[in-house]
Image 1 (cartoon, rainbow, N blue to C red):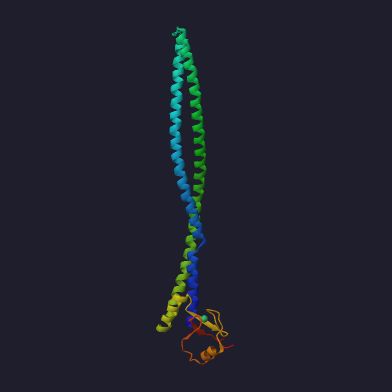
Image 2: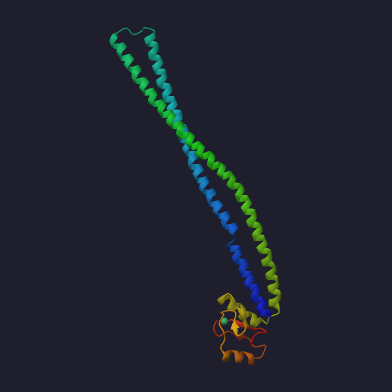
Length: 238
Ligand SMILES: [Zn+2]
């Protein structure tokens, strides 16, 4: 019976459609894409941190340089013997002492900034490497996904063609009923096999079976339970 062939093809087409929508490769691709977006965001943050730290480092180095040259100037004055008053001498020596202290604090700042910069660079490098690997994976997963989708499209195209051929041989009103039922119940027609509707899997009672046996072969039968079109098979009454 052509309606059963049609129902088989429709079931196959739904399976293909389901496969298309739940393709593991698509999910894999989406996950990889999400990770890629995370990496991009994190890399942008690190890049901003890096430029801030580089600016901090340059500033701290300039500060160190300023203090160092002031110390040198003060020392030169001392060495040249230009300062003779004991009071002035004491002031100058004390200034050199506090400048040296300041210099060592600033050098700490430089070291600290450099360490943080190193950490940011290390992290950037590792994320960039991960991103490079991910780019390759995205290409590979994308190719697998596209191949799977193309395969599904090809199968589904063939099934659609076969369906059109079969549908052309079914009376329009029966086909209309089938399509309406299919829209409501997913499956529009089911086989009646060994007294059981293969759509809802319920067995028909003897009265209904008797009526079906007596019905002319061209009468459109419906399952009393699920209202699907029942297609009589050879094993109707066994
Ligand atoms: Zn049924």
